[in-house]
Length: 340
Image (cartoon, helix red, strand yellow):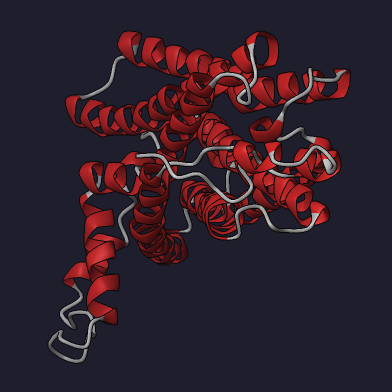
C-alpha cells in the first residue's frame, strides 16, 4: 500500500509556475511500511542502545579497559544515527512534516547525518585496530592502550566526523534528483561510498585475515584459544554485519548516480528506500551480539535493569554479597587482553 505525500510528484505537476519549490521538495511516494518500520526500529533500538551505554559505562569505569570506550563510542554514534537519521531525517522531516521545512534545515540535517555515519564506521575501524594490536602485538598493546589516550582518540574521531560532514551540506538529495548529477554531486557520492564502505571494509578484511592467520599458526593453550575465539567471533560479527547491511545502499547510490533517477523509475526509488531500511538495522544489532558472547555484559545489563525497576527487591539495589561485583570486574570476554 502506497501513500502519496502532499509534496509528491502529482502535486508538483498541477502547476509549472513554481519550479523552485518543486526542486526543494521530495517527489517521493512514501509507503506506510517504511514509516512503521522506522518507528518500530526507533522505539526498540533507542532504549536498547541507552541500556548498552549505561552497562558499558559501568564496565569501563570498573575495569579501566580501553576497548570498553570504543564500544561505548560505537553505541553513542548509533544513538546519534537513530536520532538524526531515523527520527529527524525520516520520521519528522519526510513522514510527519512532508518536507515542509526550510531549505537550510534540510541541508543542516544532511551534515549531521553524514557526521553520525562517519563517526559510527570509523569508531568501528578503531575497535578493529585495537583488537588487532591486542591479539597480534600484546606487549605493544599494553604500552599504547590506556583509557585516557583512548578517550582523546575517540574525541578526535568525533570532531573529524563532524568536520567531514560539512561538505555534504551540498549533497543533492536523491529523492528529488530530477536533473543529471553535477560534478560536485558525483564527487560527494564517490567520497561517501569510499569513506563509508570501500575503505573501512578493506581494513576489516585485511585486519581480520591477519588475525585469523596469526592465531591459526600461533601456539597457545586451549583456554586461551577459547577466549580469543570469542574475541574473533565478536569482531567478525560486528564487521561482517556492517558490510552486509550497508552493501545494498552503497551499490544503489552508485547505480542511481549513473543509471537512473528516483523521479523516473519507481523501482529504483523502492530499492533505495529498502536499502536505507536495511542499513539502519545496523544501529540496533550490536546489543544482541554483546549479550550472546559475554556473560559479564549480560549480568551488567541485568544489573542496570534491576536498578531501574521499582519492582525489584531491595528497591532495585544490586546484591550485597559482592558476587556480581567480582564477576563484573572481570573484562568482557570479547575484550580480554591477550595473555603472555
